[in-house]
Length: 284
Ligand SMILES: Cc1cc2nc3c(=O)[nH]c(=O)nc-3n(C[C@H](O)[C@H](O)[C@H](O)COP(=O)(O)OP(=O)(O)OC[C@H]3O[C@@H](n4cnc5c(N)ncnc54)[C@H](O)[C@@H]3O)c2cc1C
Image (tube, rainbow, N blue to C red; front, side):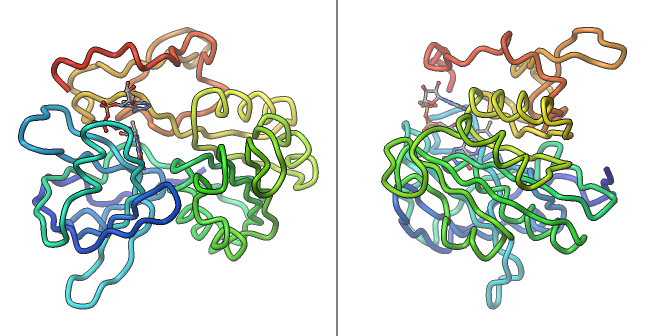
């Protein structure tokens, strides 16, 4: 696996260029000088949401694309689930935004042109599209699994068909593709693709299922974990993830700087809290 040196994160005032609603998600295009230059798939952006909310909200960087007159723009995919994300999706084009990025440890790329399976659920599939592009540039074979509760929560399923050799679409309600969960199809997909590397982004139970299936299949897995991030820069140690470190010794990793991409076989999935609704609201 290789990672090359890039410019580090910057803290800048960005500008929202456009917002487009596609299915259940809002696609936000913004310019944030200095962020795109250091971007690698799996990086995220921390965004200030209104003057009254202290904690920044984190978003995967979905795309970096040239925009006339602005240099490179970033695209985020936002699901309005609470006050911060709702505020963001209602912003008018031209609004200023305080952002920090690119943050976090990105996906590591294989050195050899191997067979890769990429699994994305809901908006969290966002970082897998630029990853698929990088992998194809390296001669890797890319197989995609795109999942969600229903059709509205499938991210760019059409684009997925252009990005990969094979695509499996899975919805819980069966509105499109196969009915069920990622866990129901993953072993079959890994076998069919003769997968050597597996990348996954989505809710914790899905990441756990993918990591377990990859291990059983004998593939290397990398999982993009979403934990509530308070500072998002490694300073507060508030996003501890239980992991098995070198030599099998248990320790905690910080989701924001040691992750959000972590080796699937290193995360102690059963010790990871999934009930985030109990997180204190006070300072957020
Ligand atoms: C690295 C990373 C990348 C992310 N990328 C995206 C993205 O591309 N698009 C997107 O829409 N969202 C993304 N999220 C989740 C997003 O940051 C949260 O949904 C957002 O902070 C919620 O803020 P809010 O003020 O709207 O709601 P809040 O009221 O703060 O939270 C609403 C509910 O979501 C829970 N929650 C808060 N943070 C998280 C979290 N990190 N993971 C799971 N549940 C959480 C809360 O406990 C609460 O139940 C990402 C999170 C992380 C850590």
